[in-house]
Structure formats: C-alpha cells, structure tokens
Amino acid sequence: MTNILPKHLLNKNVLDEIIKRRSSEGATLSITHILDEDFSRWQLKDAASKFYGGWTQARRENGASTHKGSYSGYPKKYVVDELNRLQSNGHSMKIKDFEQDLVYAIQEHFGGYTEAKLVLGIETSMNMTDKRMRRDLAARKFTNDELIFKVRRASSSSCDLNFLYVNHRDLVNIVYKRKYTLRGFAEEHGIELPKSKIVSRGASKFTKAGLTFEHMLGEILDDLGVSYTKNAHERWNPDFVINDNVWLDAKLSYWTRYHRMLERYTPHCDRLLVVYLRGPNIDEYIGGEYPHRKMSVYKLTEKLNETKRMYYEGKLMEIETELKAA
Image 1 (spheres, rainbow, N blue to C red):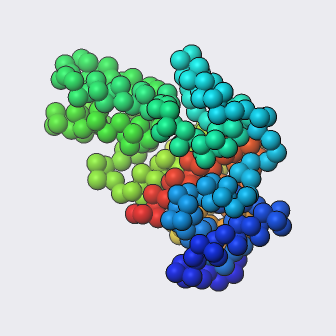
Image 2: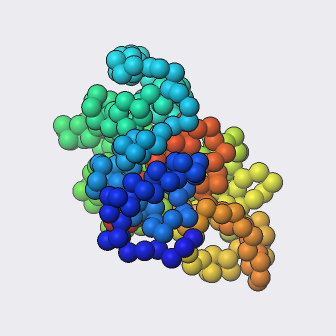
Image 3: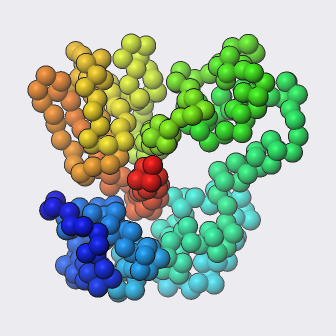
C-alpha cells in the first residue's frame, strides 16, 4: 500500500476519478478490499457518505455497477412484493438467506439492504426477537421463578454467554438489580453457564466488538462447513479448535500485541491460527520463537458464495466502523 494522503485532499472530483478508473480497469470496487489507493478505504467510504450518502450510491452515480452481471430484470414492485411475501411467511429476512438475484435487485433499486429495510419497515428475526424481549422486560416485573427460567433459556440457547450478555443487557440488569452477579445468580439457582468469561457491565467498546467478532467468526466457519469446538482445552483454551486440531484465536487487529498469548500456547504455537479483523488482507506464516499462522478474516469470506460474502463483509464493516468511532 502507498503512503496514505490526508483526507482533505479527497474531494468529490478525486473520488469520482478513483471510482471511474477502478471500474474501467476492472479493479475491485468492494470497499472492503480496496487497499492499493493513495487514500484509505475509510477515507473513501467517508467521502462517499459525504458527497453521495454512501459507497453504493457513489458507485451507481459514477456508472460503476454495484453487482456482477444482470439482476434478472426484476422491477422494483416485484422486489417490494417479494420481500413483503417472504416476511409474511415467517422468513428470517436475513440477506444471506435470499436468492442471489433478489440481492442484486435490492442493491439496484434501494442501494443496499439496510436502505430497503428502512423504507419497507422490514425486521430480521433477530431484531424482532430482541424487540419483543425488550417490550416484555419493560412491561412487567418478573417473579424469581420467571427470571430463573429466562436466564436458563438464555444460557442454553448459545455456547457463548459473552455474546448473549452484550445483546441482552436488559435481562442482565434485572439480575443486578436483585443484588446478584450473573454467575452468582446462576450458581444459586443451579443454572449451568457456558465456559466463557462474563463481561462486566462497564465493558469497553473494544471488548464488546471482540466478542461480536468472535461470534461472527463462528458463524462464518459454520457456513464454510468447518467443524469446531469452543473453549475445548482446560489449560490453553483457544477460541476455537477446528479440523486437524488447529487452534484458532480471533483478534480485532493485525497489529494486536499477543506475545503473552503465544507464551501461554508454548510449546504448541505451531497449531495456532490467528484470524484478525483489521489489517492487510493476507495469509502469512510467522516464524521465529513462536511459529504460527496469521490470516485476515476476509480470506475466509472470499470462500463463501457471493450472497453470504456480502452479508458477512457488511457486518464486519459495521464492527470496524464502531471501532473507528471508539
């Protein structure tokens, strides 16, 4: 990558020139993979939001297709009717579960699925579950038995209590208001919690982003058909143990210092694969005292079909955006 130029030099004309040049050269226009310009992808994304309202809109205004090939000629009314039909039939309404042609048509007519959801009032199954739970929590006080049931259900529904904690703060807050820690409440009432470190109420944005990234990495592995176990070692305890006894740890950045972790994994560092979110899109072997492998998560998403790749890369970019604002 060349040296990054200051962002004040990236005006609308310069942005347009970059998009049109990359389009004519056949270079990638996926904002996630643009690593060879004089401006960072964050600078390009921010400029596109400033001048056009978003990267997809900037590409469209400059005649750079937002997808490969045709979207099968679906008119906008068909897209709206199809999305409404899917939602009324109980579809998950997650973009990774849509047919690829429908995804292309959504991009063409709305500029992206986020915009389509806002316009059409679409809710994903996760959003609807979360809203129902919040309404339920706000509507009434739980008896102790009801609270025990909800905590037990939350625990049994996932092997990663950390992720549940971050996304179900209201339930955990009720436990705290009754003068318990979550682990203390679980132990008193015979609830088995996953073997995960419970995040404190004051957990930083970086801690929460790390947990979200780890959870999403598990979903990516699932969609790649990679079998794994979580927290499978009492002593070394990597995030994932995958095929052929490879130990996988998730990190937010290529530049994260994890010397102590490598010391902890000695003498088994050669089993270790570090998958990171932010940094160069590479897969490399690190030699020396602690030999291990290091890989960008985007090397994994490249192996998915286009619909799922777009879904996960959009979610990963959301985490990166939150980290940038932290």
